[in-house]
Every structure is written in C-alpha cells, then in structure tokens.
Image: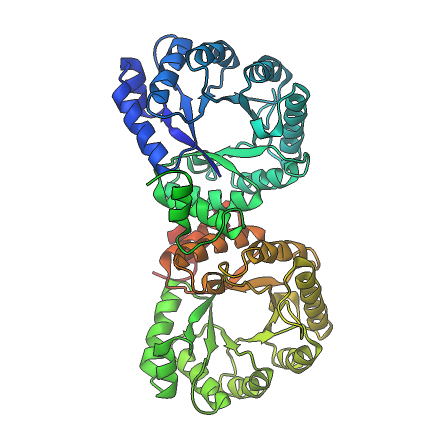
Length: 271
Length: 271
C-alpha cells in the first residue's frame, strides 16, 4: 500500500494560511505527523492560495522536503501550473522523486504532462476521464484508463511510475459509482502486465457525509480487495491505516504475524 | 445483509454451562443482546455439551424462541443429529423458519440433509467441501458449491433457501485462503440466477489471532464486496455491524442517508 498524504492541501484552512504566510512550522508539523502515521508520499496541493502558484509550489516542496525525504506528488487541476512548476521543483530538489498529480486522458492534458513526467523521471497520475468529464459508467473509465496507460507507456514511462485514478465521487450524490470504480480497477488491472498502480482520492467518497471516517475506511478496504494499491488519504487516521494494513494481510500482500501492525511499522522504520 | 448470530454456541463457556444446567435466563439474555444488535437469524450450536443432543436442541430452540421469533439455524457437524433434531424442533415450533447448518457437498451428507430441508420448508447451508475435506484452491470450492446448489435445487429448494458457505480458514495458518474464498463467491454468484445466498462463519478467519475484531471487520467488508450477503457473526459487535452496513451502502444495496445506520436500525424495528 502506497500511502499518499492528503493533508498538505490548501483546501484545509491551516495549510492555506501557512502557504499564504509562508509559515514553515505549521506545514512541517503536519508532514511529521503524516510520516509518523505511515505516509509514503507527500501530496502537496496549493488549494485557493494567494500569489504565484509556481513560486508557491517551489516554497511548499522545499518546506515539506526539509521535514522528510519522502517523494512529493505535485497536485493541481491546472496542467500549465504543473508544467511550469515541475522543472522548478526538480531544480530545487534534484534528488527527490516527484509525481505529477494529475493528467486526464484528454489528448491536450496528456500532450502537456506526459512528456514532462518522461523527461523528469517522474511518476504520473492519470484520471480516467477525458474532455467530456467524469464517466458515469465502468466502460468509459476503462477506456480512458487504458488510453492513458498506453500513451504514457509509449512515452517510455514504466507501469511502476503510472498511477491510474478512476475518480471516486461522493456516495451521497452518486451511490452507484463506488461499485463502478472498483469494477474499473478490476478490469484495468488485467490490461497490462505488470499492471500500473491504482490510486484514489479516498476522502472524496464521503464528501458532505456524516459518517466520514467509517465510509472512508470501509471503502478503502473494499477497494484494496479490488486491486487498489495506493490512496491519497489522511495517514494520521490510525483506524484507516490499520484497516488498510489488515486488508493487505488478508489478501496475502503483507506477511501475517500476530502483531502485524507493529511489524508493518518496523518495516517502514517507524516507531 | 442477513446476520446470523454466532453467540448461542456451546463452544462459549457461558452457553455450555447454560445448556448443561438448562438455565434459560443466560441464553435469553444473550438472544436479546444479539437481536438488539441486529441479528436476523439465531444460529444455535450445542458445542461439547452433556446429554442427548436431540433433546438439547429441542430445549435450546424453545428457549431461544421464547425470547425472539427470528428464524433458527440448527448448527451441527453431525448430519444424524440434524436429521433427528429437525422434525422434533419443527413439531415444537411449527411456525418458526428453520435453517439446517450444515451439509457438505459429499453425496452422503447431501442425501441425508437435503431431503429434510425440502420436506420441512427449511433453509440449508452447504459447505463447499466434500468427503476429501476443505479444498485448498478456488476451483474445488466452486465445484463443490455448484454441486450442492444443483442438488438442492433439483430437490425443489429455491435459491432463496440455499446458503453456500465457502469455508474461511484462519488467516494465520492459511494466508492464501481468504482471497480464494472471495474468488469462489464471485464465481459461484454467476452460476445461478437468482443466485443463492453466500455465508461465512466469519470469526474463523481470526482464530488464535491477536487482532480478532479488526480482522473480522476487515474481512467482512471485503467479502461483502465479493458478494457475501450473510454471515455467522457476533451481532453485538457494534463496529462489525456498522462496517457491514457501510459496505452495503457503498455497494448501493442500502439506500444512502446521512444517518444510514439509524435508518437501518429503524427498518429492522430496533431502537
């Protein structure tokens, strides 16, 4: 399970304020908490912050990196921001693994972002949607996912560096989509061997819901059984992380031992 | 989700003592707790109790029935005990739905138990194993499950009354089996339309494990996504029940509402 921390995101008020005021301490405290909880990758998203987004990305990447040497995932819905920010962050942090989050399968987005990932040796997340928006069915998700996968591989990116994100929508507005997303993962998992990674922005499933943690945890477990091996999630949610590790033990992807949670933490060098 | 209460089982010391001493109060307190937690069916198992098993079954069935009118599942690994007990329990409780737990797919067991179920209008649980024991792979489980399903249907039992149990083994001794069991459910779900029910003796997955509740909960959620719609489980484990309901909401099998747990309880007439 590759845990992408969702927490350094300007959508959260504390992070937004920290970015606007260039307050390193707030960001770095969060980073340490996420890494201690088991985060493998720090996703960084500016959200609705002030100032130049490229400068903000460089500052945020350097600030996060000062607290951890984990890979960084640059998260923005604006391809031109990612295209401009990637070489700047690369220059500032020459040895840090970077991941682009995200491209869609629309030709324009792929044409801008896949070459950057290939050039920089970065990972890239591909949303299974195109210029027409988020598919309501399984078939279109699979089609977009396969298109993105093939296009990225043709540019020399290996499956190891490709993350397909089948886009989970809130269960309270689209109750058929959680099952569709899992079915899309199952179908896309057999398109390529080795398969790419599968990732979700987990907390979207419970947007505006009352039982957020319970829904996140339940959906994460089900999705891991369907083939999910990465998630953008709150690594400080202990019950969520423990559910994910338990799912992997039950699927024989982590060795069972009586204290398998402790074993998992030791493997990762956590206390 | 059809919740079979696992708790009235002579393997538990308190229940064993209650059966041996014919102490109705202990059993009925447990029954009320299980029903309040959401049990739909009361599984009753004598375990290693003293005295005549048929008389004990009649006493236990009547004792449980005095506290709830939920269906009763007579649980024994000995076909001859079930064959003898079923008509006696039926005579004592003429209006209570009964379920036989369980037959295997071995010709001898099916030959004894399926006719009893057909005759009594009872449900029947079929383990996906035969005289050779519990299969180590998916294929044999599917073969045994299909054999049991066909044999039961040929005797006039409808899929609605047939429960296939693909036999979950403890994850600490057979770590590949939890995934095999789920794959067997997925494959058996398409053998008949409408499909039978799928059930597991859930707590077996965590026998002798340290993190029992977490493993039970995680495996239940994953199995529901694979097609499980019934489980023999502890209905008083609130987190377990809430995880199951959440899984069904995420699979669009329970209508979403903000307080879907409360809605589920109200639907069942619970407070």
